[in-house]
Length: 142
Image (tube, rainbow, N blue to C red; front, side, top):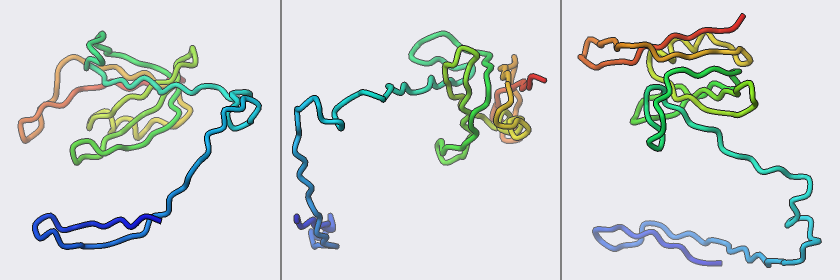
């Protein structure tokens, strides 16, 4: 056990003390050990992350994506919840699209499992506060 102490920065007085258990793991290099074997496992790659109209790693600007909607979640971005949409292309590659206010409003009407096309439209819409919002066209394959 290790004693872990949190101290107040101004007074340097202890605020709390906790005991932490330490786990020691022995590293076995025996390749016959099933924990170290890759047999029966496949590597999982992270999905591409796409911001429509934006550049990713100085790559091309992407204005349209399409695929099967696998999941709709939200994430906190600068204090605001925005949509996060996981899709799979026809060639089985996965990617994620980050939402925006107008896109999120349209994606409410798209169901998981739908084949969807999202297109960034030309122009922007101004809010009452003077901010500009990207315009999106969302289509579902029938």
